[in-house]
Length: 138
Image (cartoon, rainbow, N blue to C red; front, side):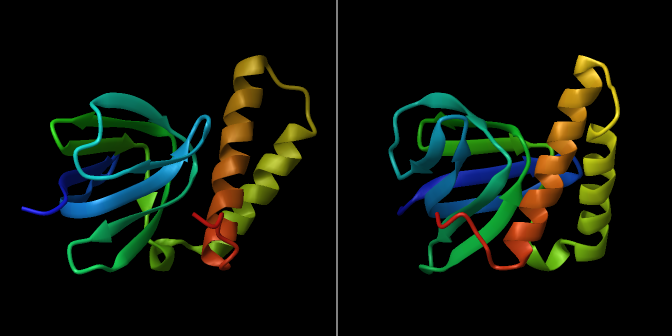
């Protein structure tokens, strides 16, 4: 059987569960690609666009938040806070979230609040770029 088993799990449910030939996403040290029979490992997933190649040869693009991917015996399990298709992104809401985060960054915050605000801003910016066709070219 071609490809590998791919399961993408987000906090609101299973985003995808099936077979794929290729998976590309953002990791902490840059873009990362997984092909069939990849070495077993666990890798951190970062906020950004991602895509997988289905068995019909079609690329399916989506946006991920932070999480991790486990590669084990030709099975990949990606667990992230969120996974969204371009058509599921509410641009107005993303713009409002960006503005709220930018405003919050102007005020004094604890270190934890600052990190959370930075993550919120990164998610909003990623959604806006992804849905406006300004993808990261992966």
